[in-house]
Image (cartoon, rainbow, N blue to C red):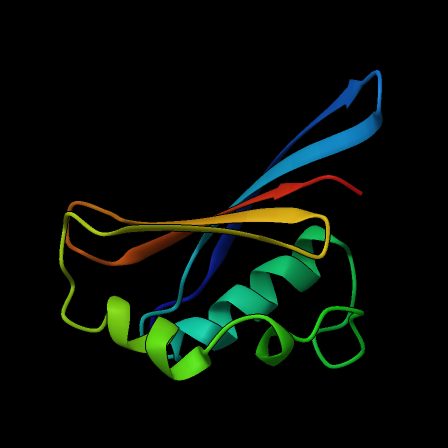
Length: 103
């Protein structure tokens, strides 16, 4: 079983606190689940009780399908709930989730 890993880099700007989070997705879970988990962890919120509901903004089936074949040259970026989410396939085609939080 693959475990997820989260690294954090926080900094202050004139607009307030911003933080960057990199989350190595568990490839045994749907990517949409891993993105929701990454956003919750970035905001120090419980996954179930967090304020953002992915299905309000993103087609989860389409998201899950984008990285299922482990394509190395795949990158996806979207903005929602005061975050920018970037998903990049690593050298093995596994998704790495980057959360840029603007809260």
